Image 1 (tube, rainbow, N blue to C red):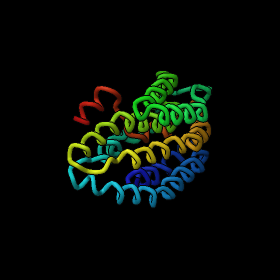
Image 2: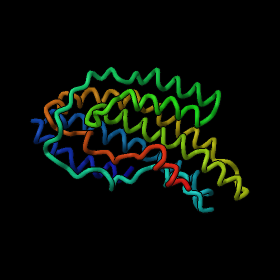
Image 3: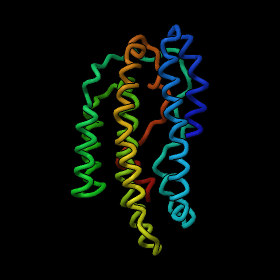
Length: 211
């Protein structure tokens, strides 16, 4: 989280110069949101410590390092999106319902379908896509971590990981709003948000990491 704050603070004036100041409100809101989540992140780190110390990196494997985010560039692909490709409220409720009924894997199916619905334009719907991909990664890794804990005779981290999944889904509405605000700039080729998030691998790559 601190790395994300540092990256977005450093890039805010750069995007501001490219956009004639229109991007500054987006950058400020993004950084404020990240700062507000710092105490939450610390709490999750504290709660995850018992498993991390036992060699089960439940958070380290779920979150992708910000160091893998693309380098800053002044020009990106001009992307146009209607913003209608993912109804975040529908996705959130469907994923939560499937999680309550059948667990992490079932919720992951909903999230995978939502990611696919966004199409092949990674330069648009960036924050929504990022949260969906991160939540999807969580649903794949969570059963692995629960099994590892059981094998080591430790309590299950399922409740903690379920809370983290809910946090991801809760953030979708705010992510959608920031994506909507960034869309006119992205259509001009200013890659704010599009170029500021680390890529998150899916499916087989995630399983390979988990093993």
